[in-house]
Amino acid sequence: MAFSSSPIFISTENLRSILTHQTLINHIQLNLPKISTFLQTPIRQHYNLSTSSSLLLMPSWSSSSSYPYIGVKLVTHFPQNSSINLPGVQGSYVLFNSTTGQTLASMDSTELTLFRTSCVSGLASKYLARDDSEVLVMVGAGSLAPHLIKAHFSARPSLKKVLIWNRTVEKAETLAKKLSESDEFSLLSGLSFEGVGNLDEVVGFGDIVSCATNSETPLVKGERLKIGAHLDLVGSFKHSMKECDDEALKRGKVFVDNEAALVEAGELVGGFERGVIKEDEIGGNLVELIRGDKVGRSCLEEITVFKSVGSAVVDMLAAQFVYETYTRK
Image (cartoon, rainbow, N blue to C red):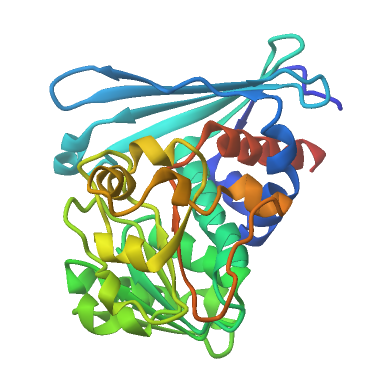
């Protein structure tokens, strides 16, 4: 494997031109089980810079010469930035050669994270959603929502309708209009988009219900999920956050992206504490699904739940794919 002699900066524009949700889903599916065996990923480091701002460091490195990479994601969280029209979360991903320590490349970790997070959900849909899924209910209309829609469509091209809900209905309607008019989706006959104002009324239509919010109160009520639905939970990453209620966990067979979800995700931690679900009742993680060690959806009527919190392993896979594609070009 040839490496560039000087560090490369891969712009966000170049990153977007390299990545598609379909190619990244395929890359993760093919490589995640293998690299999970030799990638070291310590617990992320979190530093409070002030009462409201923070710095996060997420390193990982390979112990195999066949995969010669070190990666570090650096993220700043400045929520007050909204008042000056700047993103609250910003960051970079830096890739090194693990044999020589040479800096190889840096890229926008915000965009990288949007792609890898959505593609993990899309990949899980291949194992957990019904093959004949036609309606996707998208809960949340933030920056991750269009990525999740594209990833789920890549995994389940049978989708025909996307219903988008957001606390501010205008934001849901704006995203629906934008996606309807986008070149990417205008070429896809039959896929329609609609912004909706009442989640309880539409969640029961969802063959797939995908959530990407910062909610601290349950949004999806389990009693309203249709038979055979797949619930995809992306937003929560701390104990106070939850996107679904206990009934959704009771009715569904629950899977996670990795073991960190069992101690980080508010829905699961709270569910364990209240005795709604036990850890040994978790159906498996993404690597086990890919390998075939655990069975995903077992019948058409089953409700499945997938909770993801992200991992440095998938960050590394996405960064490696971008870097190697860029240098080949």
